[in-house]
Length: 423
Image (cartoon, rainbow, N blue to C red; front, side, top):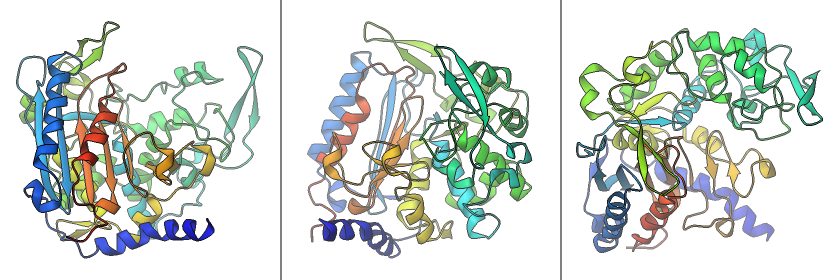
């Protein structure tokens, strides 16, 4: 067993080393057969997506599969807004898929020697110097005590800082008073830094390093990027990530000329059908103050744009002629850092990480990593299969539709030549 674990521990490094020999140019297209996928089996994705749309369970979907650096599947289903057909270049709210991009920004600064994972956050945002923790007492009360240790950059990257989104927190009312309850910032008429400094005064949910708690961690990291770089997060993303990768349709707020490609948000009803929740034209991404750049959940993007970012990670940090990150940095980002604090999977710097195949309830590979967003978007990267998969829709709440799990299995069943097999 120990030998087996040692082999598993070096697999990510081997895959990243092999990735260095992959082409660094923009994503090209290929027939499924060229990259070891079955055209007939891919049609099962078409059938399931079409059925979900026809049954009124999802409004519209864009699905993308890239293998060996080539897009072998890119299709759209349903509608943008209940009326217009969904194009493959539709622009979606990607919410927490923003986190991976903010993580990459932090790691760029680490590579430049401008910060360390062990740095206390208070080094960059002094308001976090004397953090407090709210400890529940009784059914609704709590006491406040000083945090046992300072919150570090690594605590934020792994969601072990003790900071939540405020929902069901001991000091939930304090989150609300700070204007930092829930993950949505697009409607706020203040810079993200102002919101983060207000958040720093809230007594948090746990002592740093003791629990995995999903929350504002990556928004705080986004402001760290601003403080260290001297740029807004929007400017840093554009200069250091979006332009080099060719991500021309990824923004915090929607440009006027792209309104015709923006999606509406639907939500699941109790009877299993869906209803319009937010229109494509009347929302904060179109009409908002455009002041808060949320690194945790603020971005808009397309399936192809996000696939470019993921392909960069799969390639060991390089893409489109640019070396964004070192392979060793990507290796660290996609390793498990929290052990049993997260659950059945490992958790890296913003990604779930598959450590054992038997832990999963779906098809997959050891070493795969991914995440998703609040509007029911999802993605993952599988180094063993040289695979990138992205599914975009806008469904909140999603109910029990189960489309993400089905898409996962449909992608893997389409593989007829494994990445571990010779041609």
